[in-house]
Image (cartoon, rainbow, N blue to C red):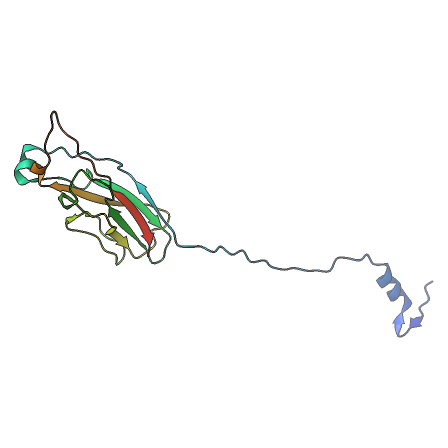
Length: 177
């Protein structure tokens, strides 16, 4: 038989039950933030590291030879910048073999967003010149920009026997806007 006594207004059986229970951990939780501090970046990949222009008789008659579209120089770029990127080109050779005023460039690739493109032939210089730009991020996928190349004043370049190669090196760079 169980006798109940009151201790300060509570039955003893209830107190015994409370004391005999197994302690459990207190329920706790918390959070932790993971922050990726992204910075604007751009990448460039030269698809066509070298092209050779072989003027025909018709080219000599017109005074220039061109490599346009697919035969030109393809450059891939991508950027995560929300304001886009600019593709630039220059010829910084110390002693270029093709006179810079004879070496022309342009692109037929449409600009990205509200960007710009050099759509008419322009003489290359030893300083950066904008070839193409985008005002939006290109994301993970690459954007291909084709550089059309033209060499004019062909009769200024003599053949010293069996065909003579005149070589200039173009340098491309991409910067975020």
